[in-house]
Image (cartoon, rainbow, N blue to C red; front, side, top):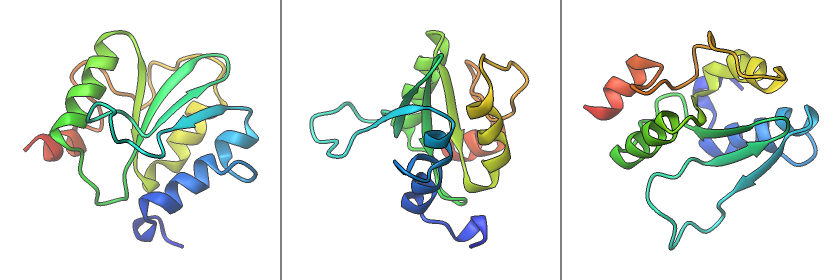
Length: 126
């Protein structure tokens, strides 16, 4: 299936399925809020840990971040969190992050304090 056709659920399964997901095969443990009622708005889809902790927000290819997601992800990044927003076209970048044993400063999918994938962030914030 072309990446632009994946739903967010299918994209999540590709990365985090308990048997066949890329993150699972690379030894990552993940936590996903199944019922977000009572959770603060904007929390990332996944908390992942192995040799470090990362926060991941997944979007379908034409998906947009909500204002709450932008605020939370930016706050996590400013607090030193390794935070990512991945779209299906980011599969290679996601694989690079998940394969790495340490944080990689040059990864284009990483959020910096002002955000990353600035084209997507700017559109989401508009």
